Length: 366
Image (cartoon, rainbow, N blue to C red; front, side, top):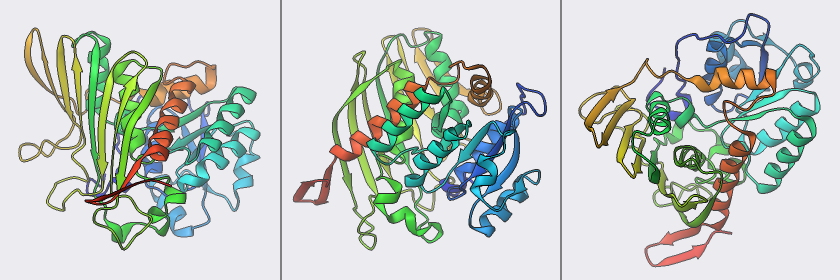
């Protein structure tokens, strides 16, 4: 697993199949982001079989087949769409293309699993909402910073057990290493990646709704800026936002592309969760200058102070639950409305953001 670059970060866990061989067959369409490997790893470890792949770029397909040699290379998207034995399509296409791919998948009777951001516009989101209601199919979204991080998984379990009481505030930090020379052209085009709050901010908002036990929230304030990458005029390298949930919990998060090369991983992602009876900090990917291993959780409550190293212990339960949800029509992994609400709020935060042009000039985005 490459820890230097978030684009190629693809966690691997223990095999925990929830289905027998042949019960859940899936295919990949669109390999533009390396998250497709994390998505497929999770599904395969839960018993899914990746049976086909399509992307117009043969180099991307070649790399995918090295990781999943069982996948059949097909010549067109239609071959996958028209295969009645395939249950689900996974996609990490260019963000602006993920919504349309999902509509085509569901029009052919298939569940869909999109990398985040699943949408770049509210219009795409509304189309997806209508399509899931029409078909009854699942539109999963890969919010990997919670779903594929054992520290975050364990934090959710502690909250459910009441370890810190009622959650009243969450603070999230999602720094990323830019590695501009490794990024494709679309990465710098806002129309295609959706903006920093829509893109990597989606992880943050989804974890807030989950940890706070909220169904909805309001974006109170948001900002974006291009502080240090003026050669890419359409790019945003900084963003932050403040939200309040329908249950009164508050949230502040910051995302950026300023991770220095001296850090031992692609980003020092953290989350701080304040409850009425204690608090939790998760150091997701590294414990700087102390331990290169991530998944470090710190808990303080009425019983004392505790430190947990949870790598290999909490697992990634989302994927097995998601497969069973697709097969059984349940909503145990993540409700459809939760997945869509997080996507909605990150687009709203982006659309409403103040754009910081310079120290003395602030204008509205768009």
